[in-house]
Image (cartoon, rainbow, N blue to C red; front, side, top):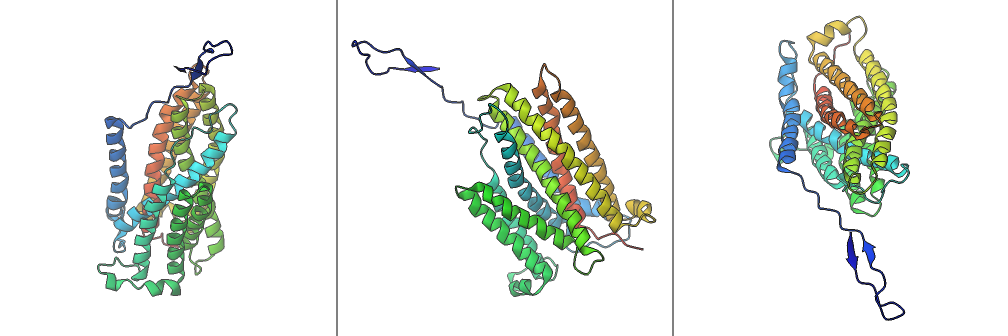
Length: 348
């Protein structure tokens, strides 16, 4: 606490000094944290770049041109959707915590996410504009052709949605970027299940719920941990524990929805009579198995965090497994993006 000299009192003397809260210390990433973040980003980039060759090895399937680059772009696109969705979701949870310093929120990353998502969506649109081939010259890109196809229209929708999300992040109402992010999720759900597919509407509905819950789960946990780290110096520890507890209760519902929609979607793509064979003999099946193991690991970390949260002596000890959960969820996002770039399973 620092002291300032107030105006003179009624008898000519000084009034009692008034306390003024000291400024919060500046927060900077330590060199170790910076190196760790860069290493995690590099690992997340290697999964979509090197994953296709590993998944396709020995299957006899042929990958589409530029599968690794497309998977990397989709990883960035999915991550760009998670950030604003998580900030909106965690912000709503924080406002419901009694006695919490809601005004002391961490800095928003939505503008950076919108910029990265815009670049990724633009790259994916250029691939669609060349007939799903990787363009090598600008002359190969048929921008007008995007308006004449369903995939092209969806690609343009994603580009425009991220542009609007960036404008919303710059405005005084950043919560408006939730709408553009939802538009990207809807476009992805429609793109994955084309109109010619049997039961396309049901498939798009399952994917819509799956992607929405995944974005809230991953993005929400990231922003909750950033908020807890911020509140540790400006708010009571009980508020941090309450925020983690509120997120944990909703995350359990999100995990159940993700599991149910994921299993249902897999059974629709791979009939029960062939699923065991396709899980080991196709690139899609192998990547799906890897994703299942990763989600199981995330669930274990979530249970560990919830168990430590219930300890009365140090409930904030749950942050340790929760940070590991965020890292694992980042890997799940990269594997999910790889899954969308691989050849779909064969229906026999």
